Image 1 (spheres, rainbow, N blue to C red):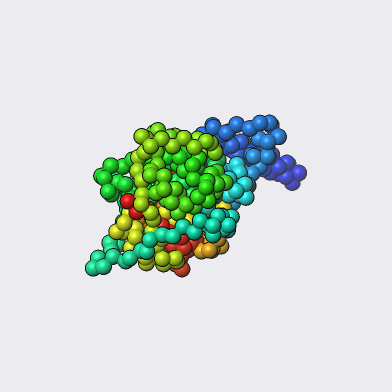
Image 2 (image 1 turned 90 degrees about the vertical axis):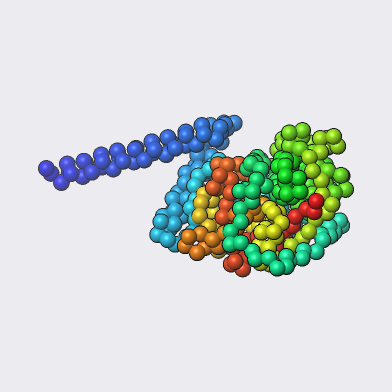
Length: 340
């Protein structure tokens, strides 16, 4: 066979492989659209979103190759946010921001009760409040920066369960619509302590069933007859102390916390113990719920955290975040829970 013939055959093989790879990507893209019910306003937008999808796919594959080599402690995966640029994703989903609310925070100055460490108690090595029935199903905030409301309801749901023995899903929409004068800004962000203050002064919060979630700002429609729980104030866990947070989680129940979730690695987290070198323990942008803690078989301490991005994100809606590494991602910077 001549040299020219060999070059021609190699070119055909390369072309065939290129076509096969392109077909594979298109198949993945079509599957992604069907799985997550994606619809776009125009072919131009769809092409733009597919390009983002392909770039995210490439970044995730590169990260997971490092995971297989033992260079990182967690895996990533494409999820329903795979067609979004990171900045637009973070702007839409991360609704906790102390800087943004500083004026309201200084104006209202919510003062929590003092956290007193439990005496004569040996803390367990592992805690998971889901096993005790104190945690509702994973919820989905949709395209609304209302993470703070889900964190607040989750903590109150846990305390109400411990008080009554009944697990009642509470209304995030009630908080979005009705707690503005306390400093919250609905889908544009808020704080859990503001929510606890509103619930105390309001005399309750409606159930999820009576006041369902809409993922948008609406008129306040609180109905006292449909109230599912209330609180008498809240407790702030000492700032920055993972030991005190551990004490609270072990002896009190699920705890509201704010974290720095403003990284692509968080957007596409799938499993493992999350550690992001760029994480801040001061710049916090996302409200979540610590429902437990533990240590992996290889000795990695973690916090077990419930998110509000649905079950297709993370480990069924949960993430294990590094524990005992200098308050990683600020998990203990602004922790609190309601008094019932």
